[in-house]
Length: 399
Image (cartoon, rainbow, N blue to C red; front, side, top):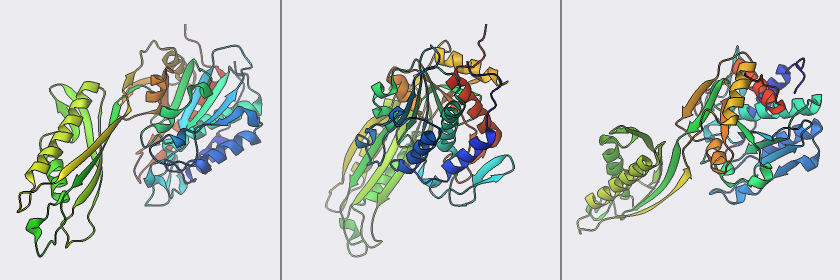
């Protein structure tokens, strides 16, 4: 048990999160963030032998410059191993963040940039717990800290982590978005799609009738999905899900009928069968559009389609030990836990799939993935307290 008289160092925690949010580091570019974490751990007395990295970034769809980062500490008390985790990458809009405090919140002084509190606040909260334990020699059970890579583009770090490197934790806690008292015990599943449309180039002024516009095909397909309720929020016969066409690229000049369009899309649902239905509807819409657009010679374009399951949905029982312990920790800091189900993916999706049931806690992030992103400082500090509480096993035991 951690000494009850121990005082959380809120000033040090705040400086940590400000430093981390200022570091450039989108998905696949986590090396600077990892270096900061490693240097902080070493300065606090963590032995080099306790710090590990893997080669997950060599298995991910995009090239990365760093793998998952792990700190393992032997316990000073006999108890099941606990794991605390967060992800190091940010979405692209947060590159260029200039964090500045405004009252009780932090935002980016760069109007064109998000803050990056998602999930540098999670990194800071878990790192704060590790540093407070190391610097103050707090009693603790065996611990694993893991900072994942490439979460924002499909949870790839958590997907490809070597389970043996995590040393078989029995209780796992992940920090990501939302209020500090919010305990996310389930999340949706996500399927990503790549679509390539091949049309036929022709002079747009001299012979447009001989061309097959890949842009026209894509437009018809997307309009079909939108008009029939298969794009955005989807509700069909009591089933729910979402879909989004998020990337579309094509064309080089206005005087050429565009012969190639590249599209990336996704489908999500907590119901795996309904998610398959959404994917099927997306594919059929594009197939119909290909047949609709032809040229004067009766030719049509063609479609290349590929997709993969990024992560499966999960839902933990409220009786799951990690959920019970997390609720006790929240009550230990004077708050009432709020159980939630997320419509986005979390590293906990893959950790749970790996056989490590994981509950996710918030860090005070607001308006994530936008230029209006903010960090609620009070909520962040509570998240840091919760991280240290859970890392030391000092949550109030409920009877």
